[in-house]
Amino acid sequence: MKTAVITDVTGQDGAYPAELLLQKGYIVHGVDHLLKANDSIYIPVGAVHCLANDTDETLHLVEVQSGSYLGEDDIERLEDLYGRH
Image 1 (cartoon, rainbow, N blue to C red):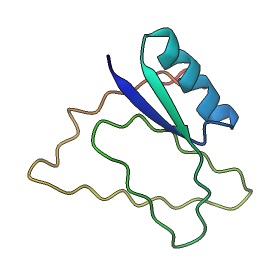
Image 2: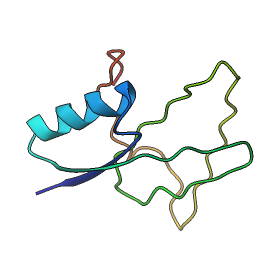
Image 3: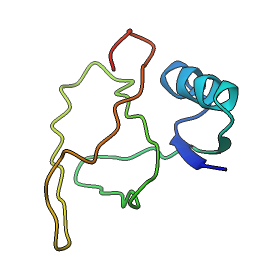
Image 4: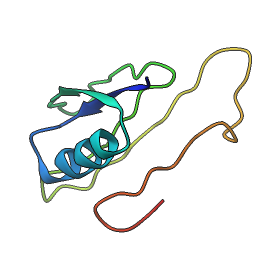
């Protein structure tokens, strides 16, 4: 059985993917992280995650990949609250 870790699971952007994944048979673990300017977070390979900006300030996101393979063809886009996949 697949396992998912959802960040900000208490917010609207986290609750929707958590429910969707539960319906698809995933085991879902929810984690809520509040990051401030210049903070960072490590998201492990295979972790399902959702990002949200709950402020009026512009969010600048820098994604850094590491390892021997840096392609994006292995990323699985899940449907979200806004109908994107």
